[in-house]
Image (cartoon, rainbow, N blue to C red; front, side, top):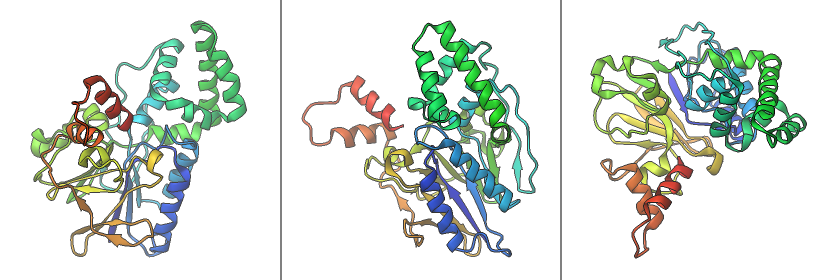
Length: 325
């Protein structure tokens, strides 16, 4: 049996469908297939078709019951918060996973608070535009230019429309899971608190969704995560594939909204090996980055400013990192 893990998709529905077509060619949709696909979260924002990505993931779950695991990412968490959705609606599954998706206590209580959340979270309004459609979003943009009270009222009406018109998609988002556990692996969006050892399942919710800590070395289970672009981890800004630390950690965020490609990790339980699905649908070795002890932010700075005689200004370096992450 094979387990496929797919990194952050970020609204890039075309790239997502290309990867699914490759899985189809590998027999994933055959009636006797027992392979599993784990989606590591961050389906929305940045790319042009967040709604299309969500619908494709929903279709996969429907067509392959019990064989597709969709995890929650920080961008879905933010989306549900600014939409004003107050409580998750859990799903059931035969897969080995725990439902620990609980919303934080700082959910905005007013339309103005949620409007501010949206402005901070939805890059360029890509997700809201995807759900509303171009015409309705253009009308909303005009309203957002007015005073806060009027803008917040228009924004709240737009969110109410999404909650009504896309109730199935919202319900699906509410049923996403924080992690997926097997006998050998932990799949999670951002990471876990490894200082907890075998009690890692009690890691803080924000750690699982938002941690930028890059772990390396041996852990009781292999940890497969997305969230932080692999280009920033290895310091190679042209690299957008999967990374392995040579021990127990795999990182899967290929900055798809910039690179156009989604890394796919393939675990084969027959021989216990990991490979990466290449762009043509074949298998290749997973890249091991050369210095696992290098701080990812330092790696980005050295890549950005390599060859320049001046030391990077801390403000510009921070801005560059934020753009990458």
